[in-house]
Length: 570
Image 1 (cartoon, rainbow, N blue to C red):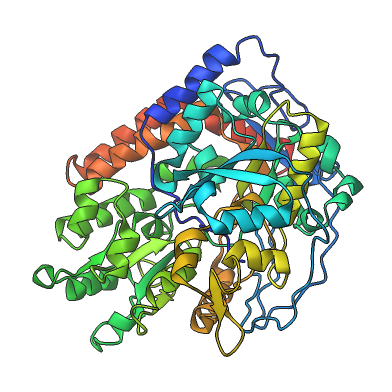
Image 2 (cartoon, rainbow, N blue to C red):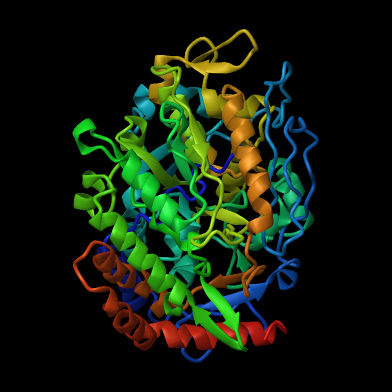
């Protein structure tokens, strides 16, 4: 299963009110709470760290569940086994649907309980529980009722912080890592809002939940907050983003060539863009232009000193290049006018945008939505390249990208039942539970093609939206067998790109950003956006960087340098 979003929303920034909500939680609800601040040794908050925490993978092993692999179906397209610290494997892909499905969770997982679950969705919400046969069928198989509270993925961080600030915590709350990184003081809030799962899942205790025991150990390590196992992880594949392009449109234009430099990308953008024909080259692709210009993923250790990405000459060159794309009007006007949050998926699907950045999970999602109406609809990922034609670099995900938290104080019986529900949700491709959670009921939500592959009906497309899939992560694989071109393309791109993954100084260390640094991300990148879009001069980069350093960047540098020294890396 490719991660549901695979970073699809990374970089779609929330409004600042989300930060105010969590600051309120920190100031009011957390006052005098006696929170545990550190999960590394020695524990405790560091000077200037703002409650930040860090622990290396080897220090987390005593907390994480035992790994017991589930002997399921094997991928048809091999992936890449990672030997890089903190970098997930390429999971491989499936081209055929199993003729016989395993029963991963015999009997019923639940005991009749009823629970609320908050999850994100990047698309139209399905009907609610009372009007949704898919929800009803899954709940019947589980043996408990999960009532989803679905929130728009593009503004999800706002909803999460508002619920945390108001103390309105659902029984299960899904929060992506890329949203956590934007939340000041989340590492304090997590103790107040959510249950410590260590007593239920640590070591061999996880064997009561075999599908959770099937999740890779590094993903569990990244579910540790403040020295406790606080969530069930959704493992990631290695890559946060790719430049996806409309292959079917490209195939109609023999003069369009894959770029090998930044200048060639600019020229390609000019060739593609045709405003009279309502076609523009790009969405806001800046997050994939970062590695093109060899901007470090976050920190770079240089001459014994940590340098943040904003402080590098590569960053300034990247910002100047993006400004050129905007000035040349190669980016769709809806994206320009929206500033953030434009629905680039719809513009890409309609052919108004030919190239945009997204997670690899969008590949399958878009094919599923549009190939039925347009059989020629095809997507590829652009091969990696660098701005000057030299060897490219690529960023990597952390071992887990989405977390499911359990509300604090529910009591042992309800927590055990919820973990059984999450165990059901974590059943991988090739199981009956996976088929039901993914496709719904045969004959109602899906039918099978001549190869036995489930194909959604209109009702399935309406009701069977990604919901249960967020609650229980599973080992990553490209399992969308209805689209073998996408399976081969995605796994092939990942295997080819793996050798370009850039190591970072903090690989394998589970850290929670210092709160001031987390709170700086959105306002600082808003300032850089103003430069890219021509509202501020490029010369302002140095001023913005100075403000970032003053307002928390230098404190973060001090914290992370101590983390590196504590772990023998500096």
